[in-house]
Each structure stands twice: as C-alpha cells, then as structure tokens.
Image (cartoon, rainbow, N blue to C red; front, side, top):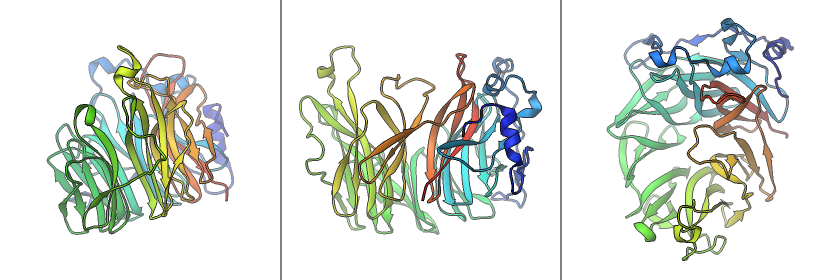
Length: 424
C-alpha cells in the first residue's frame, strides 16, 4: 500500500489495536559512565544550511513544522509499506538496520547537516522511537549487527578511528576504541564477533565475550568482506596481487588455517578481456552463503575514456556445492541479506546510473532458491526513495534509507523506514 498523502498516513494510525503516538519519544538508556545518558543538544546548522529546505517540505508542502514529528504506521500490506517517516535534520538519512527478533529492530544513521549527530531508532513491536547513544561518541555509522535482542553491535568511524558500541538489552556501552577505521562487522553470537578494518585489512579483530584480539586473514590477502557460519567457520572475500595481476577471491577458515574456495566453472576464468571482481559476502548458515560481484572488462577492452563495462554476478553455497545465480544485467548490486530460505534480497540501482552520484533511486531484487527473481520498488508520494540497508526476519524485511524530492535538484533528505511482509 502506497501512502499518497501525509494526512492519509496519519489516518492509517487509527486502525484496530494500540495506537502509535505521533509524538517523538526517546528511550532512557545508560552510558558507560552513568545511569542516565549524556544527552548532547543538536548542533545549530551552519550559516550556509539555515536557509536550506528539507526534503519533507517538498514531499508534504502543505503541512506545518509540527507535522514533521515521526509518523508510525501499523505494519500491514505487501509489498513494501512506508512505516516510519521523519525529519531529523535537513540532510538526515538512515544507513543501517538490524532485526534480532520479529518485535525488535534497530535503525541507525545521521541527523542534521555538516555537524551531523548520530541517530538511533528502535522498533518496539509497534512503533519506531529514538534511543540515546553514549555521550561523546561522534562520527558516522559504518556497520551494525546483532544475534539477539540483548546483543546488538554498532561501529562508528571518525576520520582515523572507530568505536565499537554494544547494547546488552538495557544500555549502550563502548566496548572498544580502535585506532583505525572499521569497514564491516560480523556478529554470530555474544562470544563470536568480528571487525574488519576498512584499509589494508591483513587481520580481523575478534571479540570472544571478554575482550578483543587480532586474528590473521589469508597470507597476502587484504580483506574486503567477512562472514561467519559457525563458531569455527569464517569466510572472507579478499584481494591479492597488484596491477594487472590484482585479483579477488573467496577464502574459508575452519579455525586452523585458510583455504581458497573454488567455484569450479560457474564463472568465466580471468583472461585478457575481463576478470571476476568479488565485492560482497553474506551468510545465513552453514548451508547458506552468498557472494556478489561483477565480471568486469579490462580497461583496454572498453576503449580509452570509456567506463569499463561490468556485469553483475552472484553465487550461492548450499552446503554441498556452489551454483551461479542469474542476475539481470540491468542492475548494480549493493547491500544484501539472506532470506532464510536459500534466497537473498539485494538493494540494486540501474546499471546505467553514474556510480558516483549522490542519490540513486533503488529497488530490491529478490533472488529465490529455485533461480527465479523478482524486483520490488519502495515508493513515496512526491519523492523518490534511496535504500541503504536491509534486514530480514522470517515474517518481514526491513529497509532503511531516505526519501528525496522528485522534482527539485536538492540532496536534502528525510529518514524513512520501509517494511515488507513475507508470505508463508
């Protein structure tokens, strides 16, 4: 069901059951040093942003500022339904989402403009509400993960460092400060958490429930993505070599060492015309591993001054063998999440989009275990939607991102949460 007007969205809150409030509410959580959170007032916008109108004003131009309080709509309908829309600043956006349970989820992002503060929202089973993070933590959300409602992780990067934050079901605390930036985390359970540095990752960092320590990656390989399917089984996509000999591969560790994974003949071999470039890895279990990437032409084959042509590729491990999964060539693959049934959902944007553009109108490509695929499009009336991350539970898929005006050339944005119910 598409919400066609703000008034319709508010009216929808009157359905049977507990009514969500349109007023903004903040959870009372503790920090590392005190029982009450150290609340930092939002920074004043810089002079060059004070006259910039937010995306909300373009999408819903007939409503006063008071109407911008978060709107939570009951979860009904299929495919995608807008369930939360709110302005947390002119350039706000939600970038990551985790769903440790059907009635528990977290969304993270940024609020404001140049001096943006961190934003954390929690789904309590019937509405999304703000949650305070530990005072003093600054930067940009780089990744989030969870294994249970009392085991949620958030990594925040500054220019040269990273903070690992943990939610234990009661409060957020800072688990560790890293003297480098983190690119990705993987959370298997409360005693198996990995953090992969974002630059020249020759090692990963491992949390065993009591502290962090380094764990080696394959010799000569720099990690690009990491995933775990059991306490003793770790996977990584990595790159090795230099120049024309630079190549990506998938590696697997059983706890005693690393071995390179062979895909057999499901992908064309690297040759003078093109090469396989793996980029992403997601895991759903020992019999559910996905890798995504592209088959890219070498620069000399695409012509001087032309962008190398690239075709998306995907493969799935079912516990016994790898199989290539057909991906429509019209899409670029971004963030992905297993669907728990041998398939996956992937955020995509059109292949002919400029890869460096600030805004992409996204769709969700669903790849089924039987090889079929379908595309769905989250929408908002008066705007366009750019999703940044997905999370899946047996009954629903969450998608978070931002809504942008469709008829103006502004990057001003409005935070948005979408949900899609899953048919049994």
